[in-house]
Length: 532
Image (cartoon, rainbow, N blue to C red):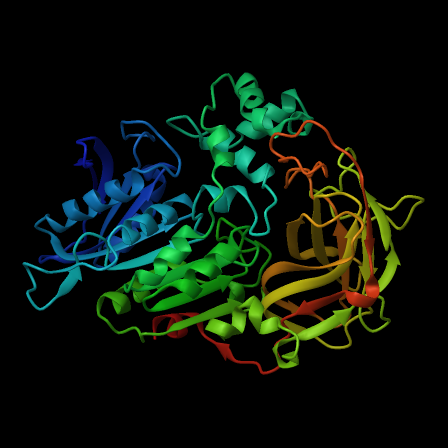
């Protein structure tokens, strides 16, 4: 199938480069549109796949990227209007039947969503099919995969701490340039291995610019944004169908779940054993693999035909087992793990021989000059001055299926006015091999020395743990370089230049881990469940 490139005008006349692939046969057809900053050329096989199933398929370079002129402002104000103009152009073509599905992954999912949110109510009659009703400006349905919902959502965790490694890597690769250099951060680190250690973080853009030979003027704006949850909240007013696709190993999985939970129209969640690239472990058995392209086509047809039940439902993969567990609305919310609802999972008390046994570090020092590293899973056996609280469970007597939100409740003190509480949960197989299971981090500003209760959400899990697995929990004050180091002074970690240690205590008696253990197994097949 041939792909041709056309110039689609934005509202201000900017001609955005757009690849179009039309299906064979006569007659108007539905369309899918992908608006991306990562290069429309990478979507050519995807366009042909959609066209082979009867859809007109389009991929457009966003303003200022690759083949499209203009200025590139990540998460700027152009994406909604430019997307609306692209959909209007599609509907005006003789090959269009008026139906449009906005599709995207990561930043492209953001583009699809802001186009849908730009018009949350208006509808229009289709000139080709008078019986059909379409949205006046936006798409008729949205497929949002691993959505990166905005500046704040990508820059900061829900609990406040700043994501350093991921944002430095993305901005070095894609920010303030027309094309991309995926390995830009690694190139910069080759010249200065301690590049991310230098303070303040606010000036990292200048250091990257020096290392890479180009300016990154938008870096400070990344940290100026503070509002969170705007896109997810706005979705409550939208009535069109949504398919939210995420991975339990994706750093934005919480945002995928939040978007699905708050969406106003028919909403489906597909949470697989994937990272941000939606790729499975190469060693995973064939039964663990899902043909996402075929599933997208089937869902799009059902959504456009109005065959989806007007409900919110979702499924979560149990790791690489090939099993999928159904999860409806409240079944995968943190509130489902509230005290007094033991049927929603299982608690592992700290300091208990049947829960999590304390190995060391009930009192430890979080030193930002020697932070706990995020890029390794070795845990120290002890030492005169522990840098974390370390706990271990006995071997699991039987396999466990986990599907839903995990969290830790801590009874803690810190002797500084600001403290981050980072919890990393690791599964140790019977041979002692470490496999990351869950992570969470929150920032607190409590009076120094006062005992306080802290809840650390650990994200939505989907795993099957074999018998003999042990759970290792680490409670620390830093998770670097994945996250900016808290200076503990109460200053903004992005602008701070002075770091001080923080002495911490964890009271095992008032602390516990909660995991979403599946008591009643409800296995489903992905496609029928998502498309019903």
